[in-house]
Length: 105
Length: 105
Length: 105
Length: 105
Image (cartoon, rainbow over all chains, first blue to last red; front, side):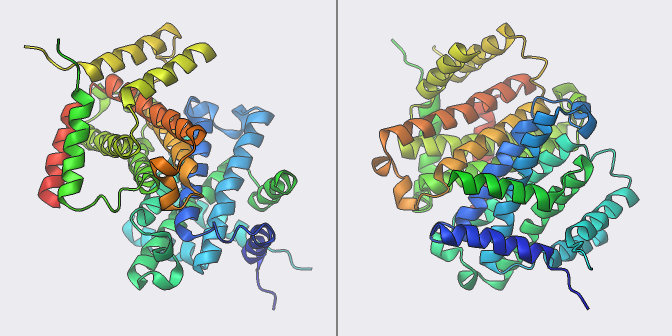
């Protein structure tokens, strides 16, 4: 039986990138949480002067879409890196939170 | 040959949750970017008074670790939802950004 | 001649609050920047599901307005505290940035 | 008797800057909250790889201090602008929140 390892593979690639640059010393959970907040700030800034209807895919220029895509990737990269250094099983954490949300809403 | 569909499966689960509550109307890219920033703020707040060495896995209480895990999940859920509504292939976007980073650093 | 000291007075009140609780040890610039990001996340979350026209003063309930007011205050408190510990003259910094903006736009 | 008007004066200068560029249309409370989150993200990013002791005034280079000062100003400018468009008396809001904090801690 094959197991999905898509997230683990991405995490390993991101870890390798950090390790090969000797960045592990900077990648404490505290610092990575800051990096996520920083990148989330850049992502929200992409949308701040757009009306809601201007923010949908078909209303975005290719340039704007590509900028947003890379900001989304930046948040994801640090989120996967934080999950790695804290030993969080991200898919499991998402499902745990979804169950809580199911009970709440 | 089996393809990894772990991220697509999570995205579909999150979409189903939103659709069944008629929340699609709220889930514009602009609003989802705000939600990511909001959850990233809650995540960074978990770490704000901890020293770096207090933020590592073995120094965290089970309660604190669980709180952090759920905040990480919240950021991830909205990031996957935004990827869904914008039609971003998240794994591909991450690799595209990693290549840019490889060239830069 | 009277000098305006409104901001300095607020800063002194906030400092006194922190000092009397022995919180100066936590109020490093790094940590205060995190606190600002955390509170900014709570502020943006107040607006995330509102349409732009629902976010204006006259469309907000008294309860919602009061919640927003307190989140604005939270960001301001940590911003004044950070200015204090770093020795930033906030009014002067704002005017310096406004001049840069004047030249840019 | 003289009244302090330092904050009102700054607010008026920032309003004039926006009005003269016809930016009032963009300055809805929702959008300004996003701008605050975006700038707070840039501010926290200034500190993300610094150790706490490297983040204090005397450890910062003049260049780094100036960058931080301008990011602090950016958050403050949008916070004052949001206070303006929502009709929040910022000094009063801060004191209201401080009283709540006094009761809590």
